[in-house]
Image (tube, rainbow, N blue to C red; front, top):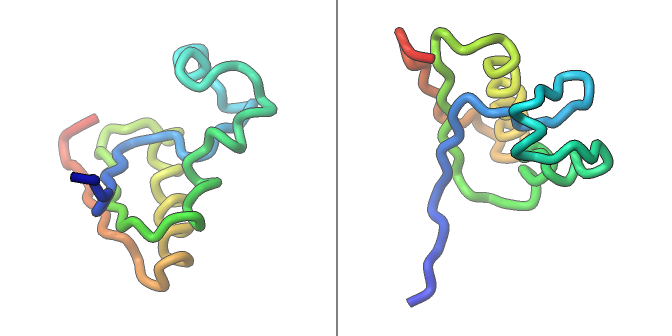
Length: 93
């Protein structure tokens, strides 16, 4: 039986990879070839899908994780013509 993606949950992520914000632990996951950052950024692919997305951000997340969540919310709002569901996880990181 073929499976279908019915939704996605993104929590405290780096949705746009930028050389000036790249940390060693992130580079281990995405690689250090900055020419690939755009292709590997989730934000690049928002317009290529209509899959509903639920976003989560934690109260104690650092700014470098909070800001991309709201950038993603903006992109999804433009794509869907309505805001995505967002939850703030109080007391968490």
